[in-house]
Each structure stands twice: as structure tokens, then as C-alpha cells.
Length: 277
Image (cartoon, rainbow, N blue to C red; front, side):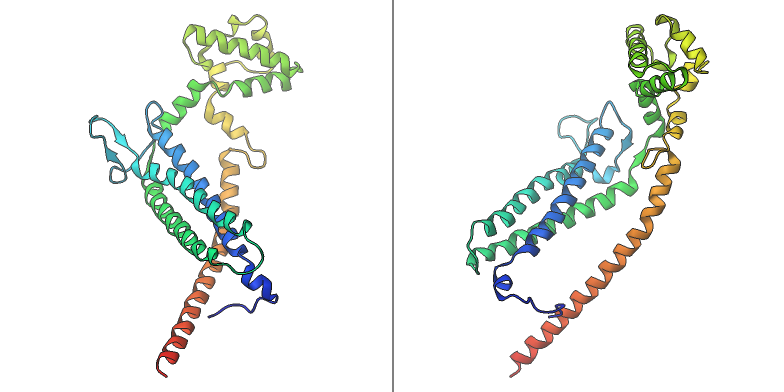
């Protein structure tokens, strides 16, 4: 059948179901991550975000609202993680409640494992169709970044680093500026530093002459270049580092797939030999 060898311990051979648990755990982890990814895309494609747009052929229309675009395939992917969790619970709880030895209870474990494999494969196929074809609205992403005030942290850090101001004080002053900007209905980059007493002098000392220029999301992103950070250069480095690993895993998968096919051929041959006697 193409196995690497035999199981040295006979009790382990008939009792052990670790391979069910290990395979199920991997599939559960994978579907949980796919679920989170699908949830992100659902939120990012819906109003008011609209940072991404899903392909029409992988969305559905609403039966009541003409303007609505339902991300049905993504919602199905999101729901599969709960299904896999339930199946994994079966895989884990059945051996846990049995004494050492073989029991007929094990028969149903194969059904749950095969269901896990089928549902996970279906989710991967859906994501593989949607992700390459979705449209990214980069202008909308930049607009939302500016509106969110997320750059307030960068401003507080700059004040603390360049003026020797304690971070708690920098945090307080920038927080006051955020509050004033919200009161005036403007983005943080368009706020007036004079709204916070003492802030203009600190900005000058820090070399920040224009808030809007300093708080530009793209410019700030370039500075987040620590290991694992979101700067374009660091993200590119991580992608390039991951490509050889992906290639390695693909080769290992192909080798295992060939081995399984060979095992099936051996089994088929044995069955034919026995049947012909």
C-alpha cells in the first residue's frame, strides 16, 4: 500500500488515532484563517468601507434591495470553520472516551475526516477564485486611513523622540488635538495646532512644520520598517523570503501525492491478483 513501514507497537497500531487528530487540527487551523480572511473581505467590500470590490460572478444579488451585492461565497467560507470545528470535536472526543484497543466507534472517524478534507478543499477553491480577481480601491484605503486618525500614534512618538517629552505627555497633547479635530469636523492632518496650548512650539522643536505632510499615511508607512513591520520594503522582503518555502512545500506535496498514487496502484494490483485466483 506504499506505507513507509510498520507500526512497531501492536497496541499503538490498533489504538492510535493521532493521524486523525493531527490532520483535523491542521484543517481546522487552515479554515479558521480562511474564515478570518473571508470576514475581512466581507467587511472591506461593504459600505461604508468599500476598500475592495468582489467580482460579480462570485457575488449574489439581493432579492429585495437592487443595490445590494451579497458576498455569498465568502459567507459560506466563513461558516465552514464552525463546521470543521464540530467535526474536529468528533475526531478528538471519540478516542478520548474509549479504553485502549480497537473499537467500532472508530469507524465514524473516517467520515468526519473525509468531510473535513472535502469542506476545506472547497473553501480553498473559492478563495483561490475570488482573491486574484477582486479589485482593490487604493484611493479609498488612503482616504479611510486619513479619516481614522491612526497616524496620531506617529505624531505622539515623534514628539516624545525629538523633544524629550515624556510619552504620556505627548499622548495627552495629541489626544487633545484629536478631540479638537473631531469637534471641528476635520481630519487630524487638517487640525490647527493652536487649538492645543504649547503644541505649536513642540511641533517646531520636532521639526514638524506641516501636520498634513507629516501625517500622510503613505509617508508614515515607509517608516514602519522594523522586522515584520508594514512598510512596503519589509512586506516585500517577507514575501520574497516566503516564496522559496512555498516552493519547497509544493515539492513535498507533489512527492507525497506521487507516493499516494503509487500506493493506490499497488493496492489495485493486489486486489486484481486476489480477484483473479
